[in-house]
Image 1 (cartoon, helix red, strand yellow):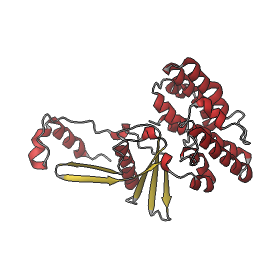
Image 2 (cartoon, rainbow, N blue to C red; image 1 turned 60 degrees about the vertical axis):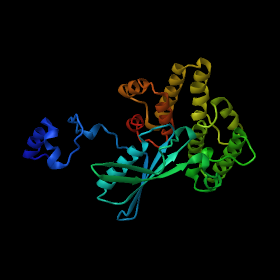
Image 3 (spheres, helix red, strand yellow; image 1 turned 120 degrees about the vertical axis):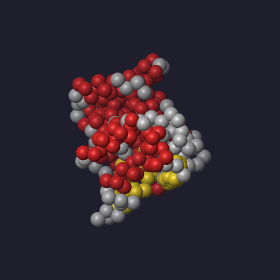
Amino acid sequence: MSLPFDATLKDMIAQDPSDFASVFGLPKITPARTLNVDLSTISAATDVAFGFGDPLQEIVDLNFQSGPDLLLPARVHLYNAAFFHREKCVPVRSVIILLRPKADSPNLTGKLVYSAGGKRVEFEYDVVRMWQQPVEPFLQGGLALLPLATLCQVPPGKDLEEGLRDIVHAIDRRLVQEVEYGRAVRLMNAAFILAGMRVLKDPLAQVFAGVRIMHESTAYDVAVDEGVQIGLEKGRLEGRLEGEIKVLLRLGSRQFGAPDAPTESALRAIQDLERLERMTDAIFTAKSWQELLATR
């Protein structure tokens, strides 16, 4: 709640920050300028977070990343601090899960360190590089892990496409034996989308050929019939953008219902192909069109 003296102090200090340098130990770097203090424009929506204990004793924040982002450690630090504040100082562990080598960066060291005014901030986080993970724990673990198996190491002695085919058929065998059809299709759709980050869409159809979990009216059909064909035939950025948007509209409509006009316009206005690809990656974890559009 804003108190009467808040506006007075803010206005007074904002007039000339340099006047306060000596008494508050501010930097003597010039020029000094007043920044916009409204932080509501910063999106603090993370990907997935889990709370452990009742009462809550620990939080783990998972952040999936499919493309390069030099600000990723800073963003994850923001999420960590926001959870720590909101949950009244419950410890928070942050994990960055890189879905493909394209998302990797030399600055993803597991530690963010900076200093100002002689004070040091040090934030540690975990980094999981999916392409370095052995596939067996994902194939043999819980059903929700199965789609991520397509991002793991392929079996030794096999090329990428052949190895992926073996992984996909192992996923198919478990889904046929262990889960009802509707969920099996959703999990296989997710596996198809994730595998599409490793191989081109044309051979991807061959990787998934012969699976017993059928793909009628699923991500398989959408990708092959719309996104892939548009991208391959036009071979231009415009065609790839159009394909990604059509895939998002079709899949999103199944997940959240048909978008209203402003939502569809906002989606079609996006011209960043990598962002659209990240949105496609997030289609099965987002809860609404608004949350999907918040993907950066």
